[in-house]
Amino acid sequence: MNIGFIGLGNMGGPMAANLARAGHVVTGFDTATVSIEGVSLAGSAAEAANDQDVVITMLPNGNILRSVAEEIVPAMRAGSVFVDCSTVDVDSARAVAETADKADVLPMDAPVSGGVGGAQGGTLTFMVGGSDAAFNKAAPLFEIMGQKAVHCGPSGNGQAAKICNNMILGVTMIATCESFALADKLGLDRQAMFDVVSTSSGYSWSMNAYCPAPGIGPTSPADNDYTPGFAADLMLKDLRLSQQAAESADADTPLGKAAMDLYTSFVESEGGSGQDFSAMLPRFEKRSRG
Image 1 (cartoon, rainbow, N blue to C red):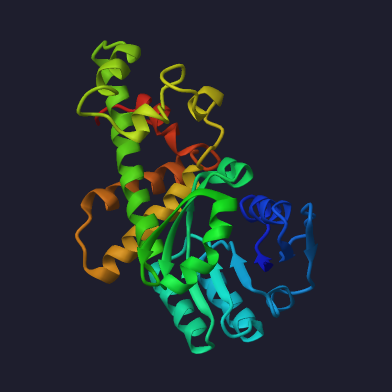
Image 2: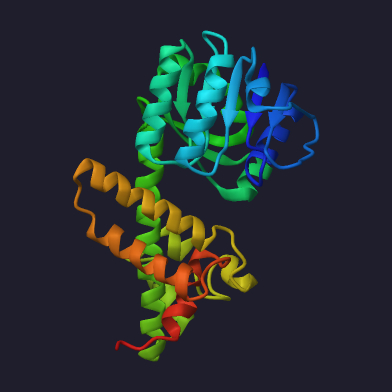
C-alpha cells in the first residue's frame, strides 16, 4: 500500500519503519526533524496524505488531531482510510470521524497499548473504532505493527476502550502500591506478599506482570530505578481523559477520579514527572496516614 504517516515520534517512528520494512511505500511528516529508515519525508502533513491508500496519525492530543485532520482530509482521496492511533478524548475522535465521513474517507480511531517497546517490536495491541470496511482494509497493517487488533464498534469506541482500560490500570497500580507499603509496615515480606497475591484473588496485571516492588516478580521498571516503561505523565493524561469522558457521559467514576487526583499530585508536585507510573510505591513508602 501507499501510506502516509503523520507523527514520527517515539511511537510513530518505529511503527512507520515497520510498515516500510514490510514493503509498503511510506511517506512521513513530523514537525520535528527526523530520519526514519525506509520512510521518505514530505514537506507538510497534507503532502504526506495526498493520494495515499491509508493515512495514519500518531499525535499528542485531541486539539492537534482536529487541526491535522482539517489539513489532511481535503488532500485524501475518496475511499482511502484515515487511521488515528493517538490517544485522545472520545469527542475529538468522533468529530474527526464526522469530518472524514463527509469527505468519503473511511475513519478509524485505533489507539494502542504496548508502549515504545511494542512499537519497535511490532507487538502493539490496537483498540479500533470505525466501520467494518475500514477495519478490513487496515487489518493487514495492524498485523505488521502489532500482535492484536480488536474491533470495538463504531467511531470513538477505540478511544473509549483505551480510556476504560487505562482507568482500570491506574486504579489497580495505586492499590498495588498501597498494599506493598502497608505490607512493609505490617512486617510482611514482599516476596511472601507477591507469592500470595499473585496466585489468589488480588491477582492483577499490575501485580503479576508489572510489579512495582524492585526484585519481585518479572523484571519491570521498578528494577531500573523506575525509568519509564509507561510514564506517570502519560497515566495522568489518560486518567484525565477518562474523567473528561465520564463527565460527558454522566458516569459516576469515583475511583477513577481519586486515581487522577493522586497522579496529579505525584506528577505536578511530588517529583513523579519523568518516572514510571509504578513509582507510586516509593511515594507511598515515604508517607504516613496523616
